[in-house]
Length: 487
Image (tube, rainbow, N blue to C red; front, side):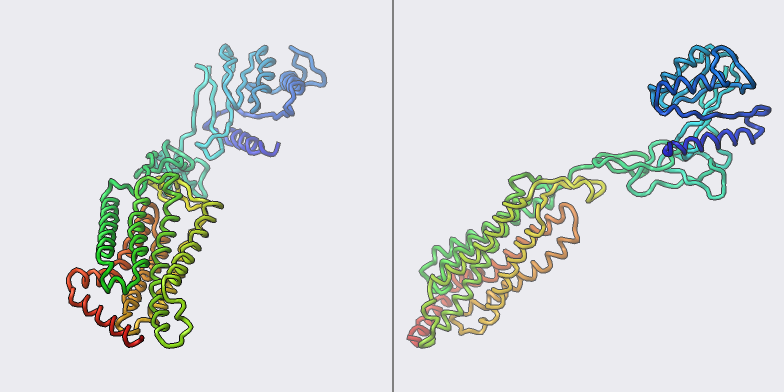
């Protein structure tokens, strides 16, 4: 068969090399015959008889005509065929070797001087090795190279161009592969759970990698998350206690409460990214982050629109007068937030995130991560949040020069500038990192953008409420004066 042709070539090459080299078998000439049994027991018995008693007719126990001296038989690859061959050869004490195993039926064959057999073997780059049968049984005699030493662990053979087949150089194994035996033709790859050691002569088990809350980086991020959520909660308490003061009333209490609540939950949601991922945390990580931040940005957008519409409605006969109040604020807040809820619901229904082990991302580690399920849906969540941020920034920028009584737009403009800057830089940074550092980048972006909203919008108000009550009273006088002028 064609696929066994290389073995026939190896046999022919070996016999020719032995016969042409007087140092190997002086005064001895080897030859061979090849018979095809066609994987049939019947034909196997026939060709063996033909091999033993070559003639026009088979006459067992008689040799007719000139015969070559048979010193051995190489069996086939199939153990059943080799067994049929052994049935006949065993009667005549003729040694047989199969490719699959040695059959020592020649232990009492003391009159056989030599037996050479070529078998495929990696040690000679498929040229084979020579097996010698003496009077002490089987003995392996691998041909020694006269032009180089053995290749040690961590090295592989590389054939020398223009030299004989047994002459080779030794070169280090390439990155990612090992040679755990001497004289290997090629290096082998470690399993998916292992990686090569420094000498590339063995494999080391990989360690699982994820952003653990026990390591220093995880501790820092967890502390920042809890600290910022606590600060946000304190600001919310201040606004609730000072809800009757002019500065709190002037900044739409309902939207302020919703913004502070969503920011507090955003900071806490970053804790879902810490620790070993599981099914629950993978489902909640991106969806909770996307919905909560969209709610926060929707609150900012609503606050900005309320300021713009209130100023425009202050002019006599303006059509925006009927939009002033909670109706506009609630419509923007719930409408924009529900769109993100719908995107996340479609994501979870079609291709939800799940815990996964990435064994190929980093050679020395098994990265335990949340597979996003659908990368397109993940970027849809980010894209919609970016769209809301851009609209909020644009509206706030256009309204930044409104009269002093409505100057919250200035703080919103700056806060959205910080927010957009963080998330614009997030995408390339996120894509350029690997393993647990991708999680670090996302958590840091959540905390820093949330802190930007909290600091830019609410800290100036807290400063006035807690430390400058005189300014708070002045705000009240200005507001009353504006109400009087517009009334």
